[in-house]
Image (tube, rainbow, N blue to C red):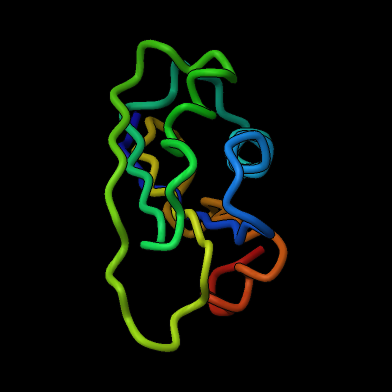
Length: 120
């Protein structure tokens, strides 16, 4: 079994805790489904949020999905002028037999513009 990394992102419409839970939950669910993962396949997950998001920790959405025994960490994304606002990014380390080229990176909604080269 190999260690792989899965990327993803979602842009929130507003900085509100319930909305963040919903959107980050949808992102994590899509990552898990598209890569045929279970919680046991997760090693760790890094979340970053743009500096304009203050309502909640993105990792809280993972806990609400039942991802309770996986190390999670949140950090603030760099504050770059002109960057897309209200974005939560994910970097999940997983165990998978999939070749690196077959990992499905997930960029939902407007966040697909962040990585047109790998967004699926």
